[in-house]
Structures are given as C-alpha cells and as structure tokens.
Image: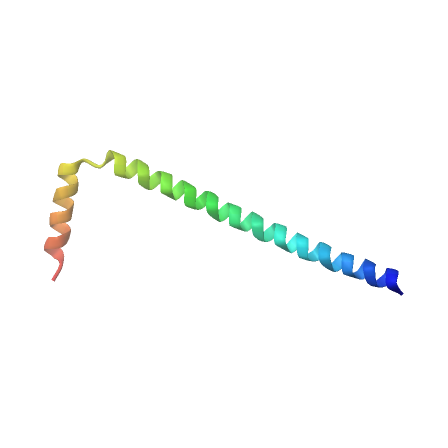
Length: 65
C-alpha cells in the first residue's frame, strides 16, 4: 500500500517537474527575444544623428494638438 502511494506521488512530482521545465524554457525564450530587442534599440540609438533627432522631435511636437 505504502509503496503504491510513493510510486504514484513520484509520478506526480515528475509531471510537475516536467511542467516546470517547460515553463522555464518558455521564459528563457522570452528573455532571448527581449535581449535581441534591447540590442536592436541600442544599435539604433547609437546610430541616430542628433540633428536629425532634433528635427524629428520638432516635427512630432508640431503635430500634437
């Protein structure tokens, strides 16, 4: 009786661990996407010309009501 209980609990724990591992894999994938997006934004910010940036800001604020 006790052995059967331990076996069933072990299987339940293994399912929980498998579920946890898949959730961790999804989180890691999201972190990789976030890292890529941050690097892209950094690259864009480094290449922006300050004069062009000022013109864009003025044009944007000029469109505001």
